[in-house]
Length: 111
Image (cartoon, rainbow, N blue to C red):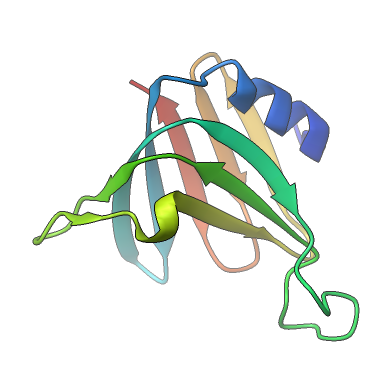
């Protein structure tokens, strides 16, 4: 079932102060990121209406985090951005959010 952006942000807001694990699958490349969620925002990038490449919205998860790769680097800018552009789908199952966009699949799980 597809959720609207408000339902998604409301669902994420309940996990403020908690750790989330984000799995991103893009072109058979999987990235894992941990975020200590401090805030959720929905941003509209500048020039979003003028350029098809720029997403209409970005779901932004703010907080300290770690990109879990070989080097375990800190999350740049203390935020994780998910571009919402074109046709995207979402579903929520208890402590897991699934988002599928034109570019990637995201799974956000409360730890």
